[in-house]
Structures are given as C-alpha cells and as structure tokens.
Image 1 (cartoon, rainbow, N blue to C red):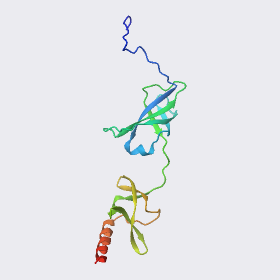
Image 2 (cartoon, rainbow, N blue to C red):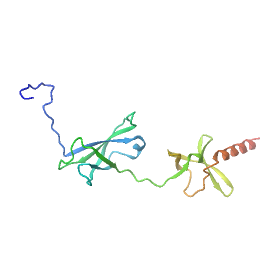
Image 3 (tube, helix red, strand yellow):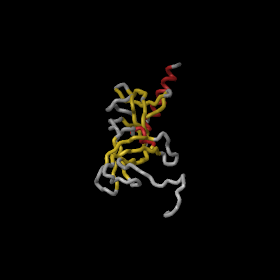
Image 4 (cartoon, helix red, strand yellow):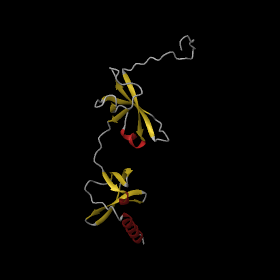
Amino acid sequence: MLGEYAQPYQAMFTIADLSSVWIEVDIYERDLSAVAVGAQATATVAAYPGERFAGKVTYISSLLDRETRTAKARVELSNPDGRLKPGMFADVLIDTPTKTEAIRLPDTALVLLQGQMTAFVGGEEGFEARPVETGERAGGMVTIRSGLDPGERVVTAGAYALKARLLKSQIGAAD
C-alpha cells in the first residue's frame, strides 16, 4: 500500500528468470517404469493452438500421492521469447522407449505349479508344462516376459484340468 512501511519479513517483489519454465506433471503409478529423467517431452498450451514446445524431464519425485496414485515430475522447457507464462495449463507428452511385441495370455492360461507360474504348451506328444516369467497384468491378460516363444500353441482354457491330471499322474508314478 502507498505510504506503508516495509517490514523485514515482507517480500517487496519477486524477480524471476522466465527464459526457461517448468511444467509440473502427474505421472500415474502404472506409467512410472516407462518415464525417466532426461526423457524428451512435448507440451501444448491453449494459448498457442497447434504449437508444440520441446522440453525434457528433469526430475521425478520419489513419493507417490496416496489419493491420486501419481508421482510429480518436472518438465523443463526453453522459453526465450517469454510466451509461456507461469500458471498456464499444459498437455504434456513424454517420449518413452518403444515397446517391443509381447506375448500376452489370458489369466486362465496360467496356473501355479510347484511355486512357479506355468503355461501348458501343445506339442506332438501332448501338453508340456512350461514355467514362465510374467509381467504386467491388465484387463484379464498377462504379459509373458520369458518361457514362451511367439507362435507356440498355448492352452488358454482348461489349464487347471491339465494341472490336476499332471499332479495325479505324478502321484501315481510315486507309488
């Protein structure tokens, strides 16, 4: 206020260098493994439709918000002309490594056999129990990281019946 005395604890003004700006983004827990510091990012803002602003991820929080299940990350963008303003909302697309093709099976194709996730693979002699390493689970499907090759015929229904038959034959063989 005009004529008011300044107190030592009061900020009189703030000086900011806006030649580069930060965008704080929320990264869902399920996407954290795909985002890394140094990843390239592209931002768009409503003020400049059709324009893209390039930046990169410079920080990812170590903490997850309990309510939103997201981690905060910071994307830094160059802003030499000062068009990007603090407080603007932005949509950010972060480049992630391209995913390779993966083998995905329904949950029902896998059984726990001797403490190991197992799939039954069809062969000329019948069915073979094959231990597999599983990955991401979503929508009733499981990604197989190892243990199966593309193109192999896998039992997707009736795996529990095959497991029971296998265990019964092992009990009979132990006599």
